[in-house]
Image 1: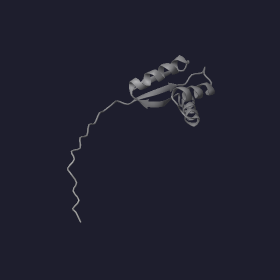
Image 2: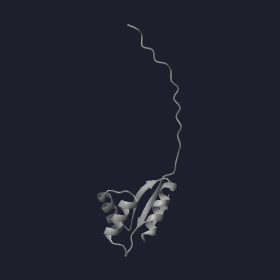
Image 3: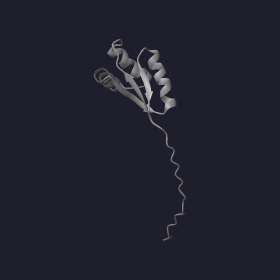
Image 4: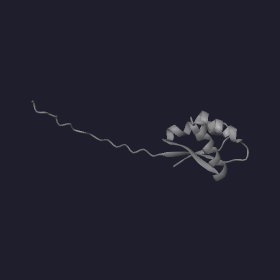
Amino acid sequence: MTPFFQPEVEVLDEVVETEVYNLVVFNDEVNTFEYVIDTLMEVCEHTPEQAEQCTLLIHYKGKCTVKNGGFEELVPLRNEICRRGISAEVMN
């Protein structure tokens, strides 16, 4: 039986801290539930269930974080949601 030889391996860990931002959608008295649900599904790629739950939170709580991520990732989503007439902000 030959002895098992395991070479030493140097492991380098690089931790890159990135700030996580929130895409928050706010309630309004103009847009319908269906319109907000469709927007979240199209823009944020939510499932129908996710979009419905977020829309209910927006309606009853006044706002909901619909997506988390990097600032550069969320700004285009925010712009598209706002372009559709729904109030949204990227928040830290």
